[in-house]
Length: 472
Image (cartoon, rainbow, N blue to C red; front, side, top):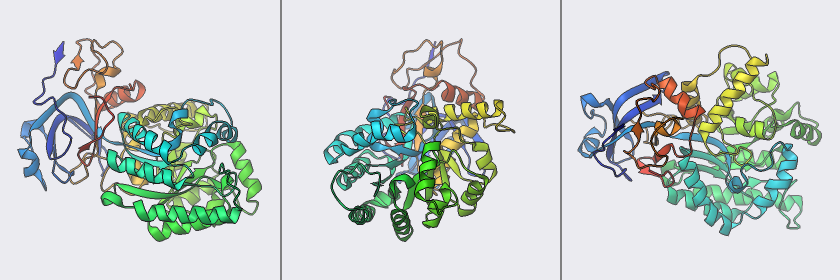
């Protein structure tokens, strides 16, 4: 057995620091960089100052001298990856993850979700949001686009928790002026005015906080629960404030039929949002499972983006999204966990299920052409996710000048015959002589995706600040 010694067993909480480990990252210009023994220097401003082979020492960079003076923390045999980007999750729903398998979407919402969200008041948010952010970080997620509940005070509590935790978060109060779980006897017009006012106030308080680490997303739940006025006015607010606009699109057949009934003047589901002026590069549409050729072309033309949620689409038997078709059309796509319909907050799990879906569609004759490989799925869950949010110049890959959103993973816990103990301290991971050869980065990512383990993420950083959650 070979144990890897550490220069320091204490993981850095704040920059500047330099980490020594294998590093695998997609590159903004294309392709993947696999540095078998890398030094990653992080400056005091939380940006990556240098990425060099260890044999060459800490390289010079914009703040390379700062990082060079920091102690080198040897994380081998851990592997550094960019932090994962989750483009679709529901903050109030984590406690119901895994419940309601196989139900139609609208029935699942009524039975499991609306009662849960109705109880997500400020006190509940203060208790649950910190735990949720720890859970996301433990899964390797450093950036999350989240739906909240209806209640304005619960959103303030959620933002305060994200501010304290350090995760990069975009959050929005759900907006519903019909099919709502708000039991107060208000008229639809009163609900509309209140929701717009509260959402605008939340945006004014939180959008752009901490240098843009916290941002706001106007969040009409979906066309079934929103009037045309709600969709139009929320989209206008997003445009005027520079915030995001997020909702659901074409998740399951029953939902699509109900949208057609409620909006008979629309050409199709996407046209409901298009008529509201909601399509654009800061619009993120979750699911988009059942789209016509017209809708796909319009998505690409408008620059609106898609959050692909393969786990939840199978959990609720909603359908299988034709990812290759959308990518070929030029639609920008990333990954979402969609907790709680997605039963796991891990984007590694979304990669795995998404890969199975692609294979199944090809075997069934629905898709042709090549499928994504493990390194492509890493790109989809990191750099492409950042691109969907328009922040790919800052995060999504391990490259000089970007903010140090990183995770350290332990491949040894994914080995089915490994001799180590799950959950052991950093530096005590062992490498068996019987272990598979993972020198090929595609093989290593294949192992992390298809045998992901809850304990494999040992640390996560945003801007070089270590997040609470992963167990080192």
